[in-house]
Image 1 (cartoon, rainbow, N blue to C red):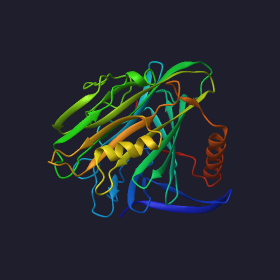
Image 2 (cartoon, one colour):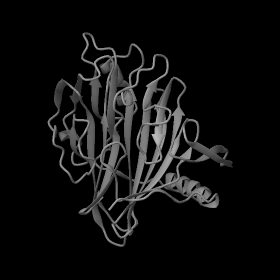
Image 3 (cartoon, rainbow, N blue to C red):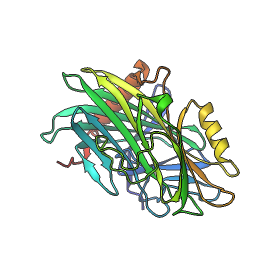
Length: 316
């Protein structure tokens, strides 16, 4: 049984938000479900859902080994969330907000002594039935400027050849310096200061092998109190959709850097993608005031309900 505990339903600006104090929850576009844990990674271990196509149960994240992760660094200090493998280091997690179709998570990068360095707010929503958008805002909570890196890594088991994916990686040159590095390996360390072992900045096709995808971003230098926002996208194919068709769909949504995976059948039948939307000019954008205001109001709601608390202790 999934351990979720609804504690309140509040109307805000004409939108009904169901706040949940939980380890995990599932959001749905109808044809597709996504499991999200409060740590901000895909996969509800209680419902057994990572990213699932409901019509036939195709699920590239959960079937054998579920592994999704993210990490952030500020100067020489780093933290990451990788519940299944490298665990959680120097990240404090706060209560999440779930609706039936969206989720919002909030975290802080903290020093070993507990000093807050960065805030990371992630808003999960569907850009299309089969496309999940993770709109991420990183804010410098300190009084000094510092360089910031952020990365997400996912491991895929693409049916029916779950140990034999073929990965297509775009070259990063047109998207540098924002896209700093990429990998086709699903088990890279989540620490963004740890170089990718299977780095593939020149792009190419890799496999078949037991692979996944990872994209490391360079947010540049954040000044005191400064925020920058960016968008990751996870996608899986609709029935009958080709890899080219999935890429075209994502490009139409503004996702201009992509890593895609497919099964190694002849012909392949299932596909997955991890991508980012690289803003014009090659760098991240300043957070939109509206997004910051909405996030702030949501956090006020959590505070008022007594939910604005850490859910997982940080690891030194």
